[in-house]
Length: 138
Image (tube, rainbow, N blue to C red; front, side, top):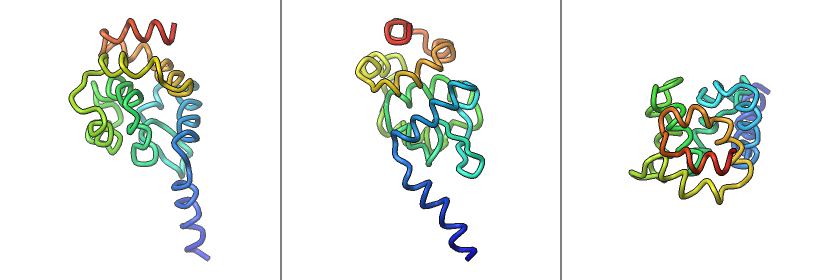
């Protein structure tokens, strides 16, 4: 009986898709942008850019926003996190502004919304992203 209780959340957690996690993270970030960098927790129902071992950071656009918002000041221990590690693999050495310029216009509407909720904080560490953020986010 105890094993079933322990296994159920892991199965539910593993079954969550990129898109459903993106929607949950978007909902949390829209309510409280500070939660964007928080370490995700299935048990506490915290869905952030770092949830599910950094799954969202496999998307270059989301990773660029995460680095700008969370990495500059190592908020919530972002640097070296699974999100940071996975994002570095897909982004390579490209800068935040360059990544956003190349990827944000063609991103899904949910990805755009998530990035746009973080616009002021992104601009603090990546002012060169202003033209694309202004165009996409208004």
